[in-house]
Image (cartoon, rainbow, N blue to C red; front, top):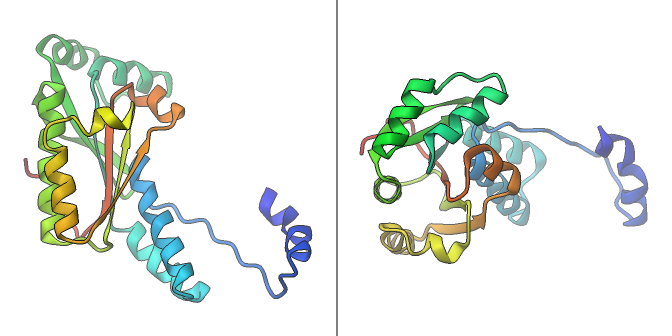
Length: 208
């Protein structure tokens, strides 16, 4: 609403005439998955696609964007979810997960977030996720884009098992790998050192 009420003087100062169009697109994903739409929108704009073409393409990708996440602390996720009224992780499963060092692999897709796998140990979880995404890249993505968000220093991300291989696979298939530190808001929700990866792909099911 702020944009709609304040765009006129900005466009006038920049000598931009013609109609102003704005559309909000929810790609049904979370965290790094949101970056796929942003990158594609910039590419479409640079390629001089018209607004109609951009809208059609972005809405198609929104329906086919996946985000996967591995978090270091299941109990922390439960506490954060409960403060927002969510009950996806029970107290018992959180306690057992913490005691057994079980790490959840989560998926965000078409507005739904859910558990797809459980892995023993955070590093093993990270490697499982990276290996899986490497296979998706090899199978072919709908855009040559992979977005990674990490809840810590990017130097530490590069030290995790399986990540160097993922970078190599992306280079082999001409997929641009975008790395970014996770925002403070996201880290508060999922915890420090959490990893999220987003990409656009044909419909599929997770298989470790």
